[in-house]
Amino acid sequence: MNRVIAVVVSLAILACASVSPNRKSSTTINSISLGMSKQEVISVMGEPSRISADPSAEYLIYSLVEEVDTTYFPPKEIKAEYFIRIVNGVVKAFGRVGEFGSEGLRQR
Image 1 (cartoon, rainbow, N blue to C red):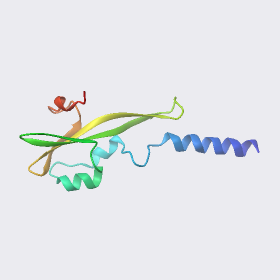
Image 2 (cartoon, rainbow, N blue to C red):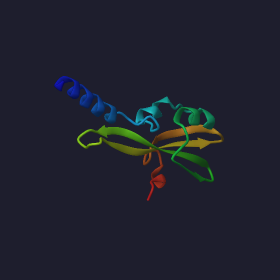
Image 3 (cartoon, rainbow, N blue to C red):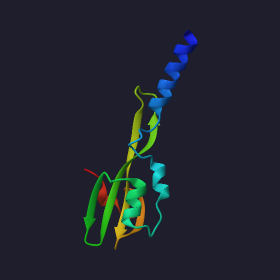
C-alpha cells in the first residue's frame, strides 16, 4: 500500500514538473529559420503573446518557458521573452528580447 501511494505521489510531482501543454518551451525557438514566412512561424510557435511594430519591421513576441523550478510546489515556470523580427513577410532575426537591437521590445 505504501508503495502505491509513493508511486502515485511521484507521478503527480513529475506531471507538475513538465511544461504545460499550452505553453511553449524556449527550445521551440530553435525551429525558426531565417527566411521563414510569418505564417510558418505562427504554425510552429503558435500565436504570439504580443506584437510590436516600427516602420521597418513587425515583431512577434513570445513568452517562453526556459526552465521549471521544482523547488516550489506546484513547480514554478521561469519564462523569458523571445522575439521574431518579420520584414517584408519573412523572418530576418530572432532571439531573446534584448539581443540584436531588440532592447526596445522589453515589456515595462
